[in-house]
Length: 290
Ligand SMILES: [Fe+2]
Ligand SMILES: [Fe+2]
Image (cartoon, rainbow, N blue to C red; front, side):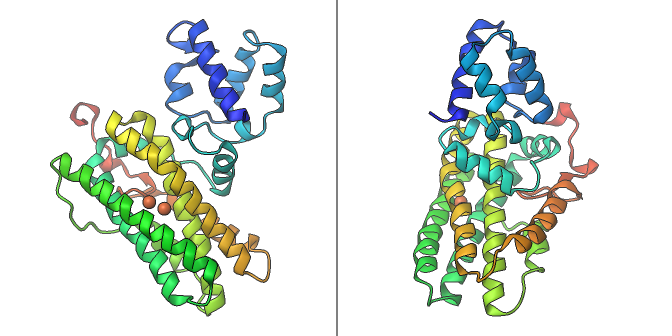
């Protein structure tokens, strides 16, 4: 059993032992809703020492996977190591301010999400046409494009069921900021494009995992169901990038991670699935928020 599985099981056991609102010094929502950043992890470890046996104490002090990454309870179906790798690959976590506005603007969230699934399929198809001599890429991108279109249809179904109308929305700045840094020559363009693809897939996966605990049952279940395929997509992109590069890709990964970080942590005047920290005017007063 993995460390993250162990942790989840132990936290659940502790929930039964502690009073209903707090576990080891943290509120239930901090543990299961907001994710555990390093600070909260420290509080949890210190307070947990009073409740735990030697085996778990060893686990708490030796665990690096869980202590260096946030805890994403919605991602329990994803291999914990895959999830830890994915979180490490991303330069930062989604800020809470984005979650707050996303919950207030679920119409925009869903409509933009549907659009992004289409974009993901288009990217995969474009790569297939641009690089027909690469069998691995042909196979992986073909499967990926099919999966993205299924996701598109699933989001469209939810949009329709909720009485919303799908429409064109101005895309966010997110992908564009990275795309302008993609080098032009064919070989380099492929490597950079695959790295950008990996970052987009990883960020989508992280956002699904982070927001899922706050959503209604139907949407939470749907977003959780997407995690496994999106985590694999990120891995496929990154594996292909390294496989087709004659040199280590670390430097290029760092270039795009830096741009991604800016796009996620800087103030953004527009709210979209991949937007940054929402500007003040995007935050609805609580009494108007649904
Ligand atoms: Fe998708
Ligand atoms: Fe994907």
